Image 1 (tube, rainbow, N blue to C red):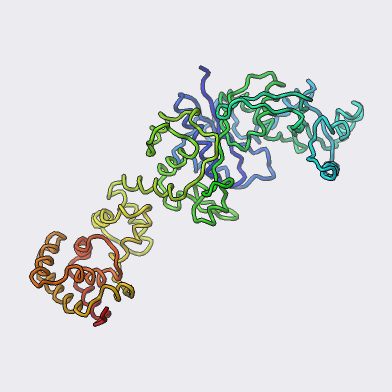
Image 2 (image 1 turned 90 degrees about the horizontal axis):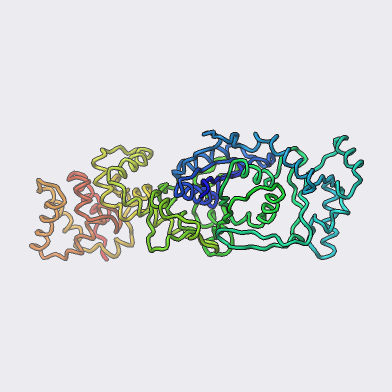
Length: 505
């Protein structure tokens, strides 16, 4: 089998969409599964759309996901450079070669002339295609005498190089995911391969670089599927062996209608980028929203690929071992924000209480609270099952750090009885007399007292929770007071009774 060499080739035009991250992930998994090479190539031929910071963002995103690069702009490699703007001189010779063989030609049409041709086509009720049907009427080296177009070039008149799409021919293409595809050449236009600014377009640079870098498999997004016939034709024109192609399905909106976009994320409150994007129009990122990279990767891997089993939780090593192109779907994959949270919940549960306490401690410090890590381990252990993110621990534990200033009036109305003040002050005395203030000891003493007094245990416990927490929430009540300690517990009972008073249900 040919050595597997794959590439992820993003353009540095902004933040990296999670669809792009999935493309990188599938390339990486395929490379590792087949003991191959994973390459990061930056395709920055469109200098007008280049965004400062995007290149670094791409690299940091892959690093966060655990996607390691074998060859690239930082790592180097035998086919350097890996940034297309630094390979500018390479592409011209291949454009010249296509012209010399008659597979491409010079075109001198101005933007105004092209706009006019499009308008005329629209007036006739059809789409404008720059191909065999119109090229003889346009300003190019096929429609002009040789002396004229050579003079234009000598005079420095701007031109582009266009591919000469074959006339009246079925172009047969093969895709590892979509099977055999046939496209008639007359439905395709003569794509620009080399621009007037001296830079190649994606089509030329992509094909040339894939050949020179000995790429064995091109695994890319579905949006490039319409370009496949052109790329097959280019390989044939160069006389090169083609890599194998696989076009990945789209990531769809949560409702399944259309491609997932930033607007969908903004509207529904979830990120569509791996990391926070700080430039221009900012965007949320999975990392900053509290997702673990392994949860993000696990979730992303299953958006378009099926392992063939009911298994949903995969480590990176397990993904590598299980991955195959044959099990990638053709149809688009619907993104489910709740499922993404489910994955993060799972990975959060796998972390030790100590790990979570260390993470939560940083969150607390930002709020001005400083606690011993052992105390926080105990606290995290009480609530971790209820949360999806470390930041959510605060919502479940805020009352541990500060006594309630107000009391939920709906709970007061439902749970506070006329006898509650008397019962709670008796309870305060029982707790005050307990030397061992552990959860087990306090629970035993309180339940014994309730039984002796023949009180309704629900009424007592509900009122007790209300003065401790301010609402009807929180973990086991005796775990709460063990963490708070005797002094704080007694203070909260006294203060709660004083504030709520003799309100009756």
